[in-house]
Image (tube, rainbow, N blue to C red; front, side):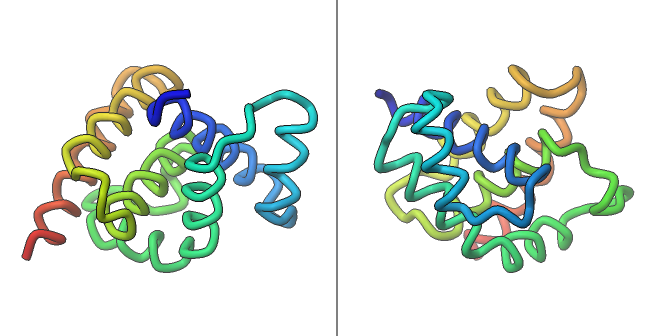
Length: 133
């Protein structure tokens, strides 16, 4: 499985968690693997769990770069994608920033509405510039 495929699986899990916030990350992961929604993968598990564990801090980063949108108005697709990408950029040193942003944009193009990818790209670009400092 490629890293892109593993990342997409983590996105699916995080998207599911947005509808089932009371479920633990571990329970969601195990259920998804057992029901063959996803394949067991170390990177998927690590990225999903790390994102869930750091969700509060990640949401603060995202909120900081919202200009004319309220946090609660971000679509569930965009929010899941943003959370994963911010987690990778901030906490996964081996993932190049450009790769994380590109993968996020691709996930938005695949799962989101027409203009969501531009919004996600803008937020992540601003976040990445801040992280460089």
